[in-house]
Length: 291
Image 1: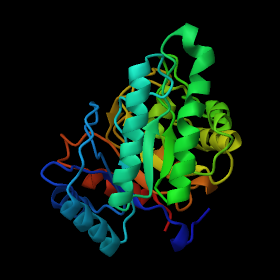
Image 2 (image 1 turned 90 degrees about the horizontal axis):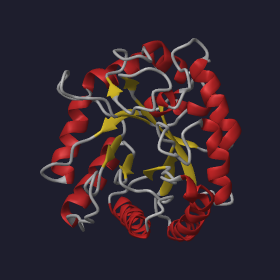
Image 3 (image 1 turned 45 degrees about the horizontal axis):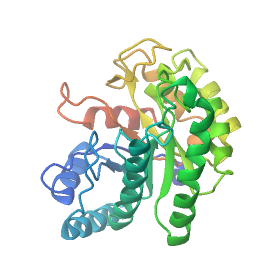
């Protein structure tokens, strides 16, 4: 299936912000050939919530607008709305609230967060209710204020994950009554680690079909394109350069042929050490994208 130019997926990468949001991210995006960007607005593995620099925010927002590239925020990896620890839950809510506000300030389209985990068996029955109580008010406020959408990202599995397999999304979204301000971010490495065989011909299509069946048409709002260092079903989230891992380049070509991915931005989060940035991954994905 060929996509019309309007339906083409924009391809970019997670982008450095070290030294200043606009100062670092925009040149990086330009050098990589990015058509979309994703950034952290707080420490990826910490709870500190920095206020940001209004001047850099404006430069970044205007720079993305001039380039015609959408921006996304990835919330801290510590966020877990299903946690049995009260302090972790409170900090998770504060972190997402902060990410939404910062996302609005920089003109972001969405805020990605991991689906979370109940951690221990005795918390399984409470975790999803906890997700509902935490997310519903936040989604209502974000929708009313026109803030970025929240995008739940299924995890790599293991550790009593609340959503790792595509079918798990049905219960997760049902917990917030299918709220229109909650979308889905699909990570290829996570799906592979959770047991979805994307490498077999037709495997990517089957997985995306399962996502649509569980979450509904139009729910897919962002894609994280990452190859994997590990075997399918490993529950290990170790990203690899596109085409150099266990998933392989053919699966990513198949991804672009699925109707659910039409027009959905694609963000690369692959290691940069071997190739000095994400330019090679982005160029490869562009070559696999139907013109």
